[in-house]
Amino acid sequence: LTFQGKESTYLEWTESRGTGKDRRTVTRSAEDYHLFLQLVCPVFSPPGGRLLPGQYEFPFQITLPPYLPSSLTWHKRYGDKASFWISYKVKANVISSNGRESTSSKLDFQVVARPRPQILGHTPSHFVEPDTQDVNAGC
Image (cartoon, rainbow, N blue to C red; front, side, top):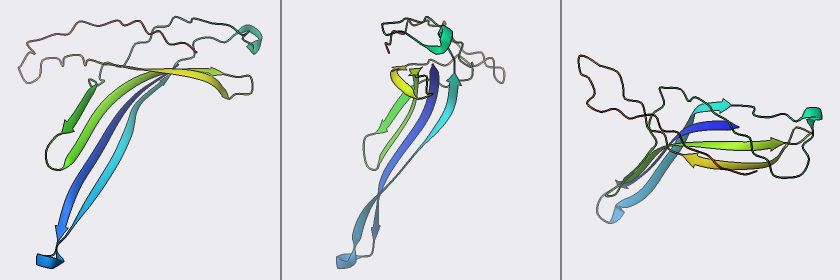
């Protein structure tokens, strides 16, 4: 299994140059992403390295780092366009005997950040209980 956390940003803006009949407007854009979390968690290795055809289920648990930011999506609606998002996914891979990925399945999931502890004498007035989610994805 591979767990990934990714931050992505997209900006689009217009620039105007010149005056009067020589005035030109150009639309520009920029985008980037940052993979800030990647955890690889081997779940099962079959005896002899071979898995017979069929359906399999491999229950697992993993503890995510406590510092992760919450999932979010933001879009600016007026004027220049801008988007920002933080997303998480889990991907299950079946690796064939030659070391190549033979099949995979992925699932997006939401993260709610743990409230920060007391900061500068201010105690947060809310607390979010841990949330356990069953993830069902077949390979």
